[in-house]
Image (cartoon, rainbow, N blue to C red; front, side, top):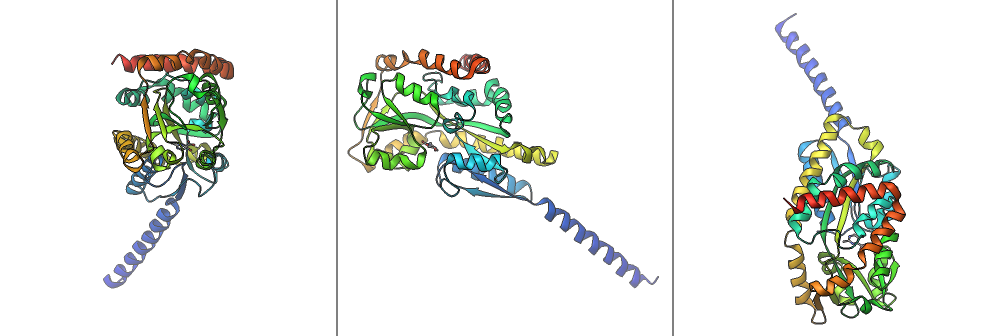
Amino acid sequence: MSSMSKFRKLAGISALALAGLTAASVVNADTWRYAHEEYEGDVQDVFAYKFKEYIEDHSDHELKIYRFGELGESSDIMEQTQAGILQFVNQSPGFTGALIPEAQIFFIPYLMPTDMDTVVEFFRKSEAINKMFPKLYADHGLKLLKMYPEGEMVVTADSPITKPADFDGKKIRVMTNPLLSATYEAFGATPTPLPWGEVYGALQTNMIQGQENPIFWIQSGGLYEVSPNLTFTHHGWFTTAMMANQDFYQGLSDKDKKLVQDASDYAFDKIVKHIDGLADKALAKIEKASDKVTVTDLNEEQMGAFKAKAPQVEKKFIEMTGDSGKKLLDQFKEDLKNVQSD
Ligand code: 6CS
């Protein structure tokens, strides 16, 4: 063979090999779909985009993100994920609690500390969060990847709330899980479960007289415009969870499983920085935008009257979840004790 034809043959082989490699990487380059419950720039959106950034920087995969409303309400995106139409979903326990009763643990009032660093440490280290919850989600075809806090819950209403009697006769919107209804019942209100899409309109038309949410959401969703009296009750954190369709996750290569886990860790680290100081910034924006807004920060004594209602909600949680919920609650409390004594 002449040296020229040898070269041609080699070039042919390498062209073939290259074509094969390209085909392999095209086959391995998937587009994954991820839906969450919030709007552009909100906490779940920042998390999703950090997750996407990591995935796309470290693989050939692409992530397509769908925000609130693009594919329906929170319950719709969960159904689509369970059906495998979506690969990833971010849904808050406020809604998942209807599917996984134990997820309602976040609605036992005054269980969580108020200090953000302690809360973040808890989410990082808690055995209940990182070991027990993944098993509960797995029973519903979901691979739990991360639980993370978004911000402390703040009540907004048509008049300031300083004591349980102030809730008398008020319909307060809650996310659609029965334990959160029990909490607001215990607080003296008439709980009204509604999906997110109906909240602003219901406040505007006085169908409901209040609701609870973290302050960034009260600002970004304009809730203060229609529900201007803000009360810091310090009774809990808005927690959320990001997960994958379990069959999809199980079908990934070990390399891609690690990629997804690392991307979740990366997004978590970014989000805890993002929420640091976010509430103060959002409150400042609200106060600048409206002179109708009042801010009430309950003192220890005022909080005491609401805290006194917590044991009855905790009892309800155990009634609703049985032995599994009791074990989770015991572990949750132990994990909290561990981070509080650090
Ligand atoms: O109140 C709600 O339904 C919504 N709140 C927040 C902070 N995120 C999404 C959720 O749907």
